[in-house]
Length: 480
Image (cartoon, rainbow, N blue to C red; front, side):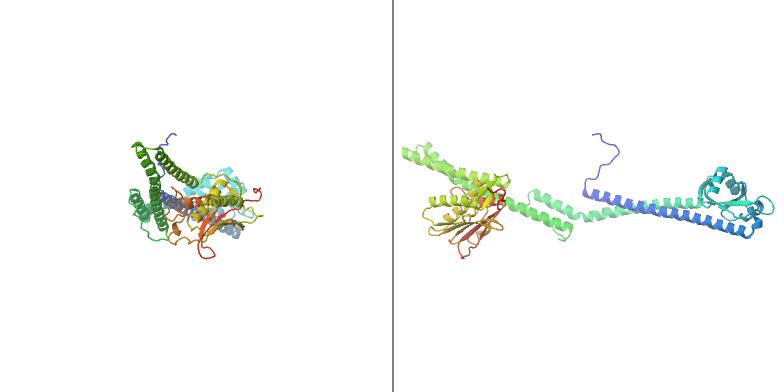
């Protein structure tokens, strides 16, 4: 692009843009008011000139009407003489005669400026005024027709041409324009100075916010923005920024704890693998049985690490809201499979499944993820309750969606753990398979990825834990 010289760029700062906007608005307002005042004054002068022409014409007509014998050129010239208005009579042949006045040069100049074509035009439009320059002076002229016959002698007067000078009015308009321009400039300069002062005071909270944000960016996470009036624009912005900084600090703390938890979870299997490998390389494993035991422990530790990494990748994928496989899934059939598997794994546990045979509880989603959701909730109930505690699993259709309810009759969840129950690597996470502390976090992420919710509520019988998952029901046209 070719740069345009002579054009200043638009101000980049907020104060510059506000000042430019104020200057533009004030300038437009002042110019508009000045132009309106100038137009009103010019219209007033024009109407006044028209009134003077009409009044003078009426007066001359009345005089000629009272003295019909004076309608000759000589008498007519004497009757229109005198006053501010310049006049000349027109005889019946259309010839213009000058009146004997003290300002004979102006009268003569008027007669000279009245060309035959202009006189003809004036006579064709009696009572209508026209502009006319007489010796470089602006005038407004009108032709007034006089009724009646001529006098006893001489040529009769047919009408009178009246001209009123406009120089004084134009001088007044010019002085008004010059004075208003000077006053406008002074007012505009004063308003710019006041606007600069007001903007400096008004934008002071923003400068304070910028300083606090800079300090926070430099590493001082305890710095916060001072809030003035919470209901003002600056106050609401300060509250919002402080809340954002608090959330950022909370997220950073959670991230640090998450990294520490991951490190802690990985330390045990890594130590196991490293320890058995060191024993092997130092020759401590002398027989086949000890070597087999070492390899078995290494494989188990590696499997735990793989499970942890897989679950972390799943959480990352769900956090990024990557699209899942979507297909109609019968939640009743899926949960029945999970319950059957749990009964095989824990044959000594009583797991009751409650469904309705005619209700397949159709949802739209990823069958593998939904199966993992049900498995995590059921594992929660089995691993953290005594072996003689019954577990109830219910699938039912309600107006707000498909409900999956897992209830146990155990001791329940302590109150201090409930606020962090679904947090990742939470100390109260009931799902603690080897190398994992993400069971309920994954369950919540899967439910939310399918547009559903999961929560813990107190069971009706007053003890134990009850997890409720609500998923949107599949539309009928998608259901098989």
